[in-house]
Image (cartoon, rainbow, N blue to C red; front, side, top):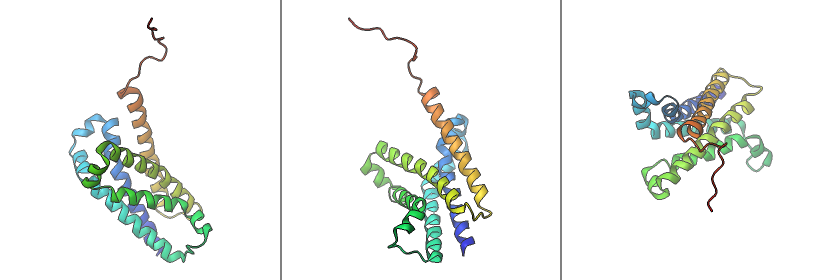
Length: 180
């Protein structure tokens, strides 16, 4: 059963990463925006994210079922804090993935929430995989970590480009004239 749980977790990771690709690739590789793959990923992004959520829910269910967890023990929550944080983040992303949520929150607030939860989730997912698979590697551990590292690097490059090239600031070395 642990292999099935790991497979579900890895599948959730794959779908989560696929959902992060369009925005990062569009900014890093501007020609990607006109590709049919980009259009397909953007069109199906909500369903990709929901698939990641339901796969992670299946993963969590099997892990909890197999582990006979004591939910009244604080050590349980301490040991599984990364998974709990991910579960809450993915749940919020899932329930706010509707057009109705976009309207209620306002598109800029909705985007900010989804951006923050997605990329916090990305780094929490890396922590989760490293922490839980540290002494118990499976065939999914290294591919998952490599994919997470690649998308994290793409995100870092994207942020660098957004901050430095796409939104150039005034020269930092130029002294502003004072008004008198």
